[in-house]
Amino acid sequence: MIASTNKKHTVQQVADILGIYRGTVINYEKKNIFPEAHRNPINGYREYTEEDIQRLKSILEGGPEG
Image (cartoon, rainbow, N blue to C red):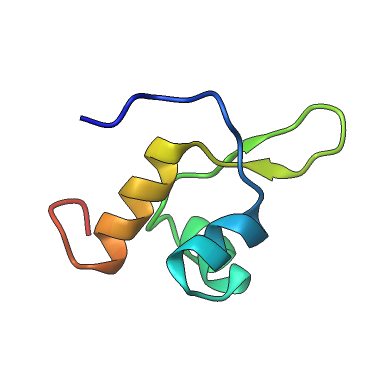
């Protein structure tokens, strides 16, 4: 099992990690395919955890949550 970290990723970083467009992540949120990301209260940017990335990866691969 991968240890949980507190590192937060931007939508662009998530897109780069998964090899998709950042708009895909945002559209999945808008269409309720993927839960809305936490927003940084200072700048309003979306913030994703490692667990969020794994969940989105599972959805993209057509896994149990997809």
